[in-house]
Length: 300
Image (spheres, rainbow, N blue to C red):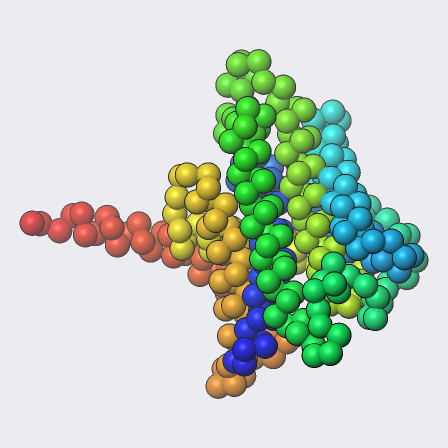
């Protein structure tokens, strides 16, 4: 695999690291099975794309994309906590609705951004194309800043209450925590990060497409699971770090599989590779536990 292909894999991995952090909040911290991600990811891309095409600053476009994603997360949480709709069903309803909303926002199934400014434009040389290096580096800075901000939030009083809401909602309510409000806040934050990833994704790919959100939740879950397998940890800082590493490793494994000529895989095999990787990530912790238990039974 060439250096440019490697940097491209890291670039996509860093974008989906934001998705993985969002999935970590909903699935792990809030214990909320959320499929809104498949709609909020293209929502962020659609909002950012239409704003950039309309001449707005790309950073402002990213901020409004995150706000739009937060709104989607709030709606999913509201359907659950106020109307009593099951978590999974509420997220499916919002995901389906977002497909039409995204079409409305873009006005077409796809929207080209080639030649238009992006958050990367000021840092890219006009003489020699160094986007293959600049884009991953800037994304790394963004991801690290988001991780540090998320760590600070989750260790604050509100963040601790949010984590308690997911760990034991009944006990949290007994302690006077407004679990419904914190569920809405957590879901808003989760989908804001996912929509921000979508906004950055369309700027690296040169366009937005209505179908780009398909499988987003699977990628996010894969990153979380792989990260937990590679770096089992109880510390919050290490948990978020493991999630980021999981996203990077996932994309690198995908890139290696697609670039390995002897395997013969092609782009259309991406979903198959994803399924295999997630299956392996789910099995490995159980295999580790079995090996440890067998070693513990051996006579000394």
